[in-house]
Image (cartoon, rainbow, N blue to C red; front, top):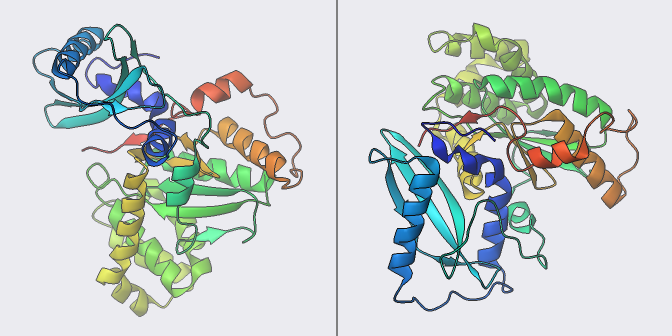
Length: 333
């Protein structure tokens, strides 16, 4: 992986989605040993770890680094060390693991092999109350956290059209995750989608497609006009639609999606979950690999398009699965 010289904490992106579920599970399960008593040398351990990572990633005096507190992990020999790094107005959070004797530092993840690594994420993903399509009893559910203004989400929109044709037996759930700090009209588009869904659930997908098909033609100045036009083309009552967009109720659904995404540590769009398996960036080969795997594992039937992973390199897909599976828009914090 190539590290960005400025936003050097990007090394965490490669594992952040899986690490989020794994670490949440580690803290929630009874199989993880309780935190060890605070040792007298903990402060020294944190100090030496900070010195090492500053040197490793070239974090000079301009970088404000906050580390700790030390946390228990599934391994009795390692602490988890949360890290928050700030430079200017940019902040990134992540973690490393350091041995209790201070001699070894690991990047990546530590798993409890007796625990389902996706169980906590699965428990936090709501599958009702948001726009969806596909069989209600589907063996595989693809949950998509997306931003209507995000160019990479527009790419995923095209990818999903192909994926849904190959796998008509899957269910797709759409969740709003507008990154308003970098996408100024994304919230307006999310409100339009939410109000279309409220008035006529099937109309959401018409508005959804129109937004992504016309993404380059939408601006902060014309977004309201465009959304009203799309609502009309979807067969919605325009007056009711306008009233909904202006109401606080529409925003509540979006805020619920945002809170849900934050609870599972989403920080970029698109982020997709295949039966709770994360794919940051929505890489098509990885998406299809995971769908095929879950269908086989749960007896969901054969695909209509043959082998979904034909031509894909299993090792490459696995390497991408932790969050390096494609382009993604990062949230500013």
